[in-house]
Image 1 (tube, rainbow, N blue to C red):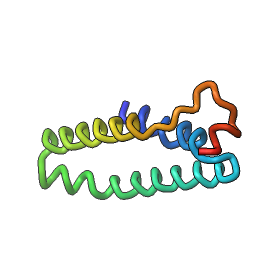
Image 2 (image 1 turned 30 degrees about the horizontal axis):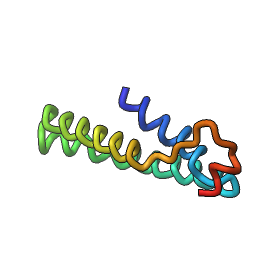
Image 3 (image 1 turned 180 degrees about the vertical axis):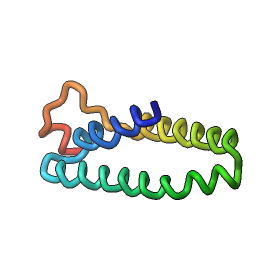
Image 4 (image 1 turned 30 degrees about the vertical axis):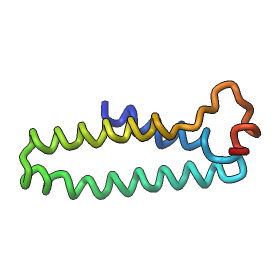
Length: 90
């Protein structure tokens, strides 16, 4: 379930908030950071689990997901009911 939120944010949200002239580059930028985070986490999470323990690590991951959801909600650019050109002006 953790991938449902970040995956949607990476691929769907980035294509709506970037201006049309750089939309593909913006989506690629978001995807690149998502892939970099996945590579980093592959190595970091096992080390953190040994250091902190599984319950503490899962709590920290849950809190980081909650923080990301709050930041996304607060800074979201609403594009509902607007044309691509109107949304790209902002």
